[in-house]
Image (cartoon, rainbow, N blue to C red):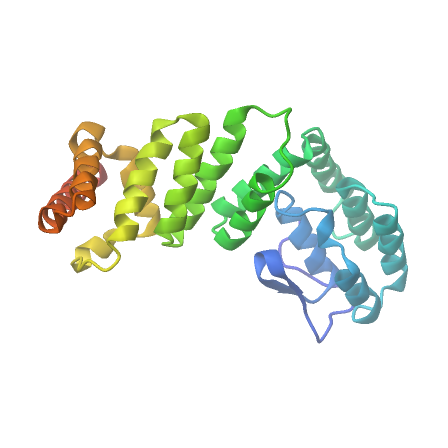
Length: 270
């Protein structure tokens, strides 16, 4: 497979910006490299009027632009579009292109909603949280696919909550985790919603610098490893104090829970 991107086609002065990944490309070779290494993140929407116009006018590859325009007008699938680009540019060899085609064919066996979740999950794993959330929202707010198990949608809500946690949007995360629990009854979603609730409603509390140890990823790690007997139940009790208006006791209880989190996290990291 290609390493350094050597452009045999025109290298444009003006880049084309791929929004989902926040990257610029300047040549057909760079487009091929992007497609090949991000196949789980792209869909047929990659090739739109903007990209076709760029290929035609900036890269001066009118023949490829015409082919892509025809494929889009015929509502061609991802495999046909990708194969057209890769074979036209000849940046990857036939074996590499065939391997990619097998991956795409495997994706095509999934229905559209499953592919969309896979795409969103890959954005999540790639730390493209905005893009992950946008794709998760297309699933949960779009037409429901009755062929999928109920817990599929619960898992989508849970993963969207993780994306919000990693962006420190704890209130939004709480809603996602709660919705996930209502659907799949998974204790992990319930526990996560409680943690997000406390972090969200105590955003104005003065945590010491050590509390800022809670990078979004560490919050998730802690949620996975805290002992429910030690941390989860006391957290519920603390929330009950807040609901009763006993704020001094509530703040003390929350601080105690957070101290326990710190200790458990230190022990986990040893």
